[in-house]
Length: 58
Length: 184
Image (cartoon, rainbow over all chains, first blue to last red; front, side):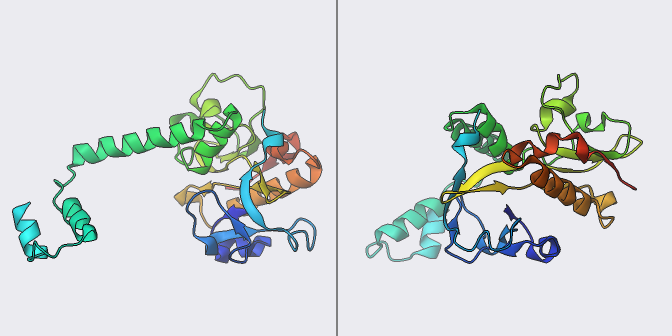
């Protein structure tokens, strides 16, 4: 996922996250919050708050 | 202050609390250039402080790159002499500004005359709810090099890294497989 321009990142398979599905910790334009599925349908059931993945912290 | 208050809110008796706040805000002295400079400096300090709330130094660095502090071209970016996408090795010592100004895993495209053309920050591992994901960016391409597909090369490199790395995608940018010639 990333925060960017859909007109640009759409060609790489990024689609906007439906509003309300995911929340960022800080202020963000939710129409620019995009996600690309590496596996088809991987994002279908996903929702919730976006937070750091603490298991990856060193 | 008097001129502002009398101009905007003539009736001093019926003012509500919100109006008083607005009035207090409007009656502040305007911010001069020097003050504005110091104000932005203090905002930067606040960013760092909030980033330090996280326990790991890794996240402090990641957050600062998400907030765009590493977007600008720096003198150290002109270090490498060949045109390719290059990832910084994790154990790279930092003899130049380049190595210390980019988080590990980030990718930089640079030209043969050693001008940085673009870059891609290290992907940050995040969770959406309980599902693992990667937060990408920032992707930057220097204005003279725009419209030549550099952004696509950077994104493709990142995608290849994700698929090759499997369960540890945050190390994607460090793979030697990302080295790839770019026509500038």
